Length: 411
Ligand SMILES: *Cc1c(COP(=O)(O)O)cnc(C)c1O
Image (cartoon, rainbow, N blue to C red; front, side, top):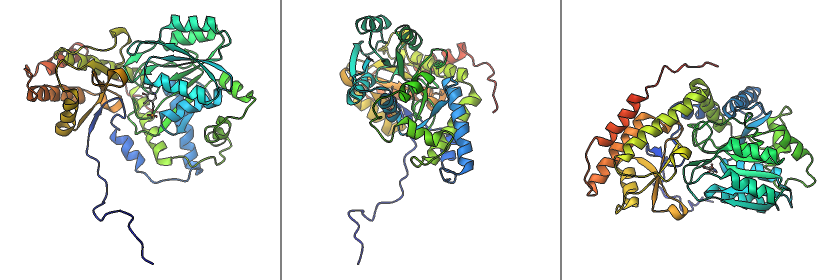
């Protein structure tokens, strides 16, 4: 018997991706140290050397989240799986959950609650604005039997940062637990899980951690552990049932699923790098590069979607200048500069661009390249450009905000 190729044509060969520069809403560029960590030999997922590494990974995540929660580990799956893990474990049929919706990801939370048989009480805010704490409190007054409040800390669809500290304070006053989406905030914006008393939090590897997509760091407080223990119904998902997953990530190390070993080496390396840099310095780096990019973009007359007070440094949403073909600009940036930026979503499709400065992508080289590329592309497309103005404006920011010597921490 001979095999048949089922359409696998002879010209299919090794895949070599082009070297892009990722300045969209994620993924961001992976640091070379992280990429090379992934290329190391695969270990058995119960190998003692590997399980020692898992323990280090958990402690590095505790540092990154600023928490002492025992239940802190990376879920095998993208940020959306981390989101789902929180909801399937914490929501039982009939539970009332307040969901704050000020962008794309709030809508996904609603979908999660409903699929778990919960009742979603929706608190809407305009896209581009942060979650309004007063509205959340009003919803709680109307629904005193609410069990959980869920919101997105850093809304990547718009670039708005919500006040997680205040929202969690309100939740505690009304005896509610919190679920916080920190996919885009972890590593990029101040986030203090224990101090703010966040109960459940999930993030993603591919935004501000300089790591490829596919893993979702999560952390759960003791209060969540109690809640799950006292569930009357089984968690509807076998794969995401925390009790089962912890058989592997906890002390006993029993087989649950084959951990993505090489992907976990990558996250370990990315978190070692975050620790070496220091959280505060990582936050400061994201802020400084944002200020520089903003100064440059302003020379084109572009306006930000989000008010300065709530603006995410790692996700810059700006209105597309009048009478310019925004799609063509993005096409040219990619074709001529290997530079990827993000388009608008929902009502903002065609109206905004989203410039990401996340993780390894948040650096001066990228800010300068981006501004330079925009000048050339705008000029090629017939706009009058004063060449060098955008970069000069950005340089001025760097000059006015020098980086002081950055202490390198060692582990
Ligand atoms: C990217 C993102 C997600 C989803 O993460 P995936 O890894 O794409 O599943 C969820 N929430 C926010 C705020 C995000 O930016």
